[in-house]
Length: 415
Image (cartoon, rainbow, N blue to C red; front, side):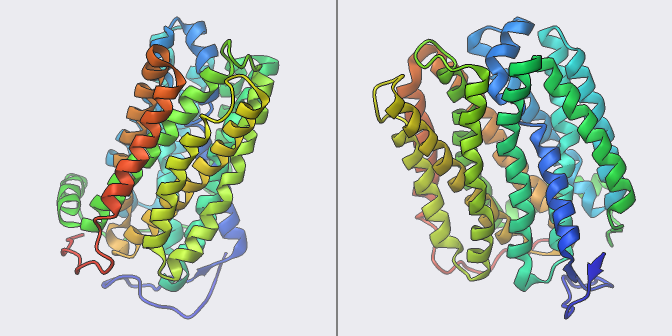
């Protein structure tokens, strides 16, 4: 399943050199990431429907997304690092089994407590997508790593972006419970497929799990690239989560009055933003990470400004929101790839932990963005909510401008 190429050692102490993954393997990894991570986003366009059904007030509707993201964040700290310790295929299949069970629990939920607990475990199990992404990087020589990771991330981002219209479409015809039943069936089928087709990867690490976890604090405090890239994307992902949690409330509210099927069409527009991932991967391989990062952050801030064009409820306003969705998704997708490309070159032995820390930090930003966005929209309306989202992107941009063009040598990191 893996085509040979000119081998180059990935990290000192590794017995085997990375190779160039076959196209079929890349497509498999990309598809798996997309299907897995989609589970985190099915609820975003359904927040109004679900909150009404389970008895959550409008000001607390953001908790539906927040609990999933908190579970994912916890998984990034406690599960994703296991990719550096235990056989990766077994870890992925076990995580998918947990996710399938949690999705079935969400399907059966009729109260706020039961649904939020299910959402927490959906996020926890879905973290195995972030075992697959470092796995793809491990299989690839450094000179092509950005390109391959960009392709895998395209699948992941398509999963994020297609999850919203798919959920709206299914909910518009069969109700929101059907969304989670369909996802449970798809996730269970994926677990069976990956168990038979995913290559084995036995990490070289001999560290015990407690030492593995304790080493993450050392990595976080001694790796400036990780610190910056995590902060950058926490701000951008917070803006992203704010947008996609509150825009469905705006569009299905009295001003725009869109149906769930119309909302599905709107969410489908944002899929175009996924084209930024492979472009960003190629830019990163050519050494254009800094300029690309600044451009991505500027795009996210500009996207929120676009949402203020036109009279609320008008056709012009809807078109402006569509353009904003595409621009926002492009900026966030590109910045994510730039960040992963930067941290994946730091070493294969600690790649799972670095990726887990990176994702955990920015998913906390996403959880905060979802929660604050719903509260802000309920109490202050869209203009203030858009200003909050733009401000988050501008904070990242201001901090990125302080980064030296030529970074000093990285602090030494002990795997």
